[in-house]
Length: 102
Length: 194
Length: 174
Picture (cartoon, one colour):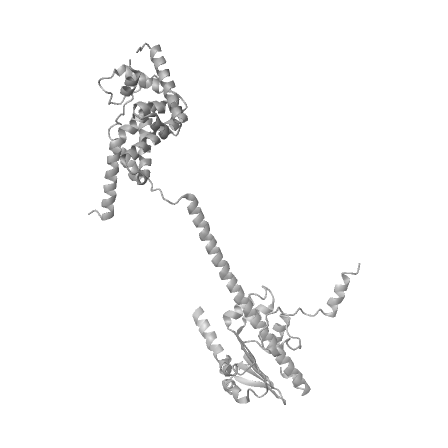
């Protein structure tokens, strides 16, 4: 017996059962499309987006805060100026016994 | 409905608000000038920083506008009464009444109230000195008593002249701490009473 | 009416179907000769072709495709056999044989050889199959399996020795 030859004859390529190609193509048709986007890329993109949104929100809040602080400072200035003028005027009017006017 | 209310409020504020831009020509002659213009939106923003409780926030929210122009000049005589005519002409409406008109050698102060059905709807103050001019217009139902209450609650005024009053710049430093009352001082001493 | 994109997709699928047809005996043959289980072999073969479809853009020639298929199929067979963790317990004579047995071989001997091959350790089995089914040189087997050439030769030598001894024990003499 020539084992080499017998092995070649025994271990030949084999045709699969009928319809094998059709079954492969059918599975291919129904296979969910694999995205080139790896899971870690999707997570990284989501985190980046979240960071971007949070940064924008923070900036918006900060700008609002700055505007509010300026408005408050302006208001306090205006009120102090008004009060000061009224106080001075009241003092002058008191000298003429007219301080009760304001 | 909200739109109607806003329109009504705007219409109501129309008479009380004075156009201070008529004084802008003085800015080029002034050494320093200040321009404060707070509309309802900015007043709302400012009120948000006045704390959640207390009347101060409510008083500020009752105002519809605060407008200030101040000018400081190098020398006396840089402005005259004629420069104030565009302002005074706006105060000639039927609802405006001049309550105070104080004049001395170097100073003049006019205080105008806007009254509707016996209720105050606004105030304009014109204070002129030799080298300084201040015009303040407050729009809203804020009478003198409320104004005093507001300044007290915010720890302002108290009859002391504004620090840097002659700088004519909006202050950005925090409001001065209120002076402790004598009673409070005694209480403080108790901390060391042991 | 088929749009341009749809027509292109159909052509691509037809082309791939042709690839499957061309190499199905290689893949199924390796799987069946390795696992000696028809259902498992078909399942594995289908998986290999699905993976081939994904890898196609990176494969440049028929030879490239064939080498890829040998490598992937063999590795999958080794993994599958290890998962099962058993040499065939059932009498291999009872395993239904697919068609395509060459006529000039002794069918009984061929069957015996296939059943004894299935009892070899996985790596030795893989070496034997690539050598005798695919007619690869030891250096090519070494590349496909990612092992040194001398290790391939060692596996081959031991596998042949084992098969010869077992065949002699069953009364098949050279």
